[in-house]
Length: 305
View 1 (spheres, rainbow, N blue to C red):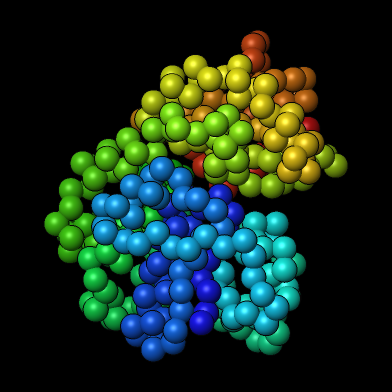
View 2: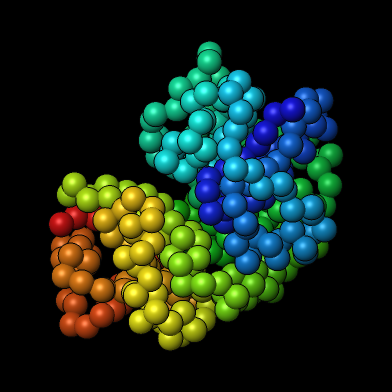
């Protein structure tokens, strides 16, 4: 049984894409496969599962030696099980930069394309067999694309991502504007999560100036709700950093509707990063960064000290 999974702290794409590809392997390639997750899905991803009557994939704690795996929505070993190089990785499907460090048992299929969403790539790879896909698979694919593109607001959006989403929406009889509003409302409801959980909910590891950073983003249509927890989130940062082997946590609250980010500034090091990376003037414990929406395209490439 092939296990299909994405990165830790699974967002919508890392929850939906394993489901999509496991369906394809099982139903089209006639190869036994199972979608699994590395952690609980976020609120938007959980909403997607309910909306399309999809079973929540099993949450795994690791992989076994020699176990066949397909990796989706990441190729970064830091976001994968610790024993990933002991497993048998047979395929990678992703839309992030090539990180390196995964060792395979032999030649494999690797598809990494400059698109906004892994699900868009899967749509293309599945091709004509998409006609056989059930509503749940198409619904997951649409949700992943709208999530990763922030309903086409993100600068990572390509015309092809948009065309695929619009085709899927038409097939499903879904109004994109109304549907995305429901998605983002689910994503914005984080009241049940601890401060520590929020800091880890959608985060990536990155090294800058010899320091290890956990770069977290929280995309929301209700930024005031998150910013009201600013002091508690800042207080939780040192503990999260220490537990995760990082030197610092950077938290960007992305306002989907205003198309801007608010960076929490707990200390002089983060202030220096904000001023150097984004040419911002920081006068308090937050700074608003107009137009900043994408960690992949706008935040990480800009980081400097």
